[in-house]
Each structure stands twice: as structure tokens, then as C-alpha cells.
Image (cartoon, rainbow, N blue to C red; front, side, top):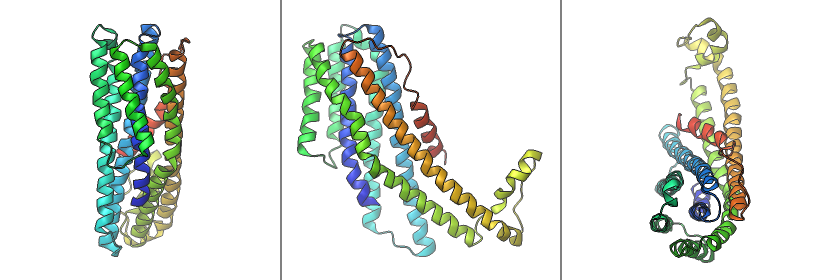
Length: 313
């Protein structure tokens, strides 16, 4: 698993850097469209960026749980968990933390968009852009291709320069071409992160099944469908009853395993659709077309629901 994680992190670096550029387009819209459209777009981008941050946070939690399961398997069943594998997981966690910070800053900047319409906007945008550029530099532990990295850096630098020179329209058009790449990059890296979730769910289900087989699990939860309607709570069953309930517990594990895989798939699809829709909305405003939407993409709610579920384990 760790080797697959390594290959996917490079893609995260590109995607999140472009997300910073994507917000740049929003800040430039103030000079291209009405402040009402600009503020609405910024608010929507803030919500979408928050979902992106929460998506990363949930993935980080999944990696933490994966690390713990590897450790449990090593202690209980003598399954090797090498030092190299441990370090790779820790490194990936650190990289995810950087991406959570970048996405959070992106959301905060978008949420504070109102002040960017003031006379100090060029300086404010330059400061924010430089901060995001610095955060992109901090993601260089896993490198994208030199061409992709240089293109992103150049775009951020041109963005800051354009705002300072009040060349809003030209810069907005340039940022729009990069914004469309955000959803494409998210889709490109999705299979690698799916493998991270798949490995975690499989490891967790296998460990849970083993513990049920060893009678190390209280299987009385299987009685809840019969007891809950009457306000009754199951107690720890006698050993023989617990053994009889084991098949039901394993059925529950199997059903839950499928549910976890499905909810992750739905969340990833929703995040992809949210980013695609925001790209389309920004394109409308950047090309001097009215932006009629005043609420974030509805798919953001699916991402938030999944992230909340994962973080509550």
C-alpha cells in the first residue's frame, strides 16, 4: 500500500497548487463582473475548498487507522510491519497535513473575499498569492514533473503580477484555463486514493472477522433489530450464545464493508462533480457571462457527510 500512496501524493501536489490558482481567478473576477457575482462565486468556492480540506482530513484519518491495524496485526498475528512501511505512512501523513493546510487557507481566503474589493485589494491578493505559492513549495517532498511544477509556479507568479498591475481581464482568462484542469487532475488521481481506502477497508474487515472467530467480540449487537423497537439493550451474551451469534456478526462485517466502499466511491464522485461545477461557474464569470448560482454545488453535502462519518470512527 505505501508505494501506491507515494505515487498518488505527487498528483495531490499538482491538484492543490492549481486549486490555489483557481482561487486566483475568483479574486480577479471583481474587476470583470459585478461584485455580487464575485462575492457569490467566492462564497461557493470557500465551501468547495472546505470540502476538499475535509476530504483530505478523512483520508488522513484512514491512513492513521491503517497504521494502527498493521500494528495490531503484528502484535496479534506476527504479521510483519517493516520500519520502511511505517516511515512511508508517516511521511504520507505529513504530506496530507500540508494539503489540508493549503485547502483550508484556500477556503479562508475565499470566505474573506469581500475585503478584496477594497482599494488595498492588489496588495492583499499579492500577499495571499505569495502565501499559497510558499505552501506549494512546501509540497515538494514528492515531485510532479518539472513541466507541470514550473507551469503552476509561473501561473501563480503571473497572477500576482497581473493583480498588482490591475490587468484583471487578461489574468482572469489565463487563470480560467488552469481552473478547468482542477477537476481533470482530481479524476486522474482518484484510482490511487481509491486503493488506499480499499486496502484500509479490507484490512479492517479481515481483522474484525478474525476477532469474531476468536470470540474476542461482543456479538450482542446482532440482537439490536429485535430489541431496539422495545427500548431494550442487549447485555454481554454468555459464551455459547456469543458463538451462535458469530455468523450474524460476520454478515454485519461483510455488509458494512460493502457500505464503506460505496460511501467512499460516492464521496469521491461528489467531490469530482463539485470541482467540475465550480470550474464551469468560474468560467462563466471569467468570460463575462452572468453567474446565476448563489449556493455551493449540492454535491458538497455528500462529501461532508462522508468525511464526518470517517472522522467519527
